[in-house]
Amino acid sequence: MFLSHRYNPFEELDRTFNSFWDDDSDEYTDFFSTIRVPRTKRISKEEKLKKKLNKLHNQENEINHYIKQYESQIEQLKKNKQQVEKKRSDISNKITQIAEEKKKQLETNQNQKSGNNDNQKSENRIFKKVHYISDGMEIEEQYDSTNPKNCYKIIRKQGETPQIISGEQQQAQIQQNKTEEQQQQKRQKLGNGLDEKLDQLCKMSGKPASELENFVIENKDLTIGQLYDKANELKLI
Image (cartoon, rainbow, N blue to C red; front, side, top):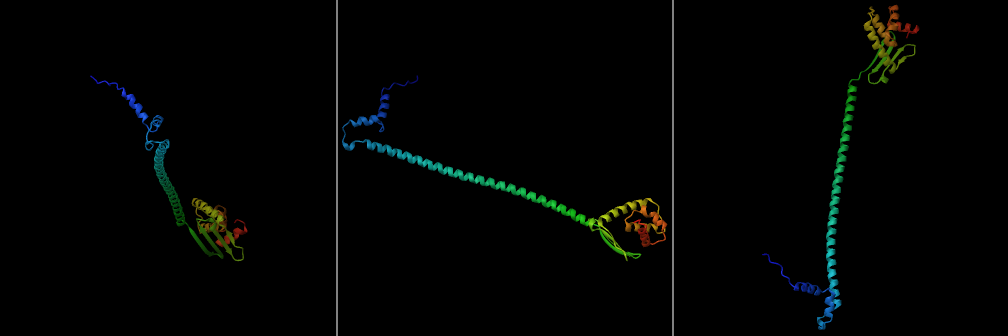
């Protein structure tokens, strides 16, 4: 059998007396105020209030202690936050720095590639300058494959104004000469040195061979200088 809790009538009294003997209770104060005790043994209301005040003071000190403790923790958390923000800023700066370095490296590679192309272009450059005299004529010619403006041709003849062919005209003349060469390969050789005279006259005048071929054949006994003078007189060139 289970033991049942037996009723104790004094339990209620115990709770009552515990409440009664509390120093803060008004019942305690009222009760002992009616009892005659020596003055030295009495507890005045002032002393009781002082005890309460002292107790509250202790509670306040305890609360202040916890406040300082939490404030210290808050300060530490703030420092931790600052450290995290600093690390985050450092990482962001490193990422930006890496991106800038990649950009500069890319620009450097592009510049080097461009420089290599320029060097290759310079290596493939064809430049020539000739100066010769033929049949009383002085011819000065310069050719630059990379810059047509550097190309020119000057034909000087005593007592006459020099004939100057600019770079653009020279380029056109070169193109015409290429066309003439193709046409020359297709047509039959004139023979007797007329092909050389025709080619030279075409170069000097800038005219295609098709316009001067008959003229050279009809005047096959003339020198290149005489052919040039007569072509000028006839306004063929």
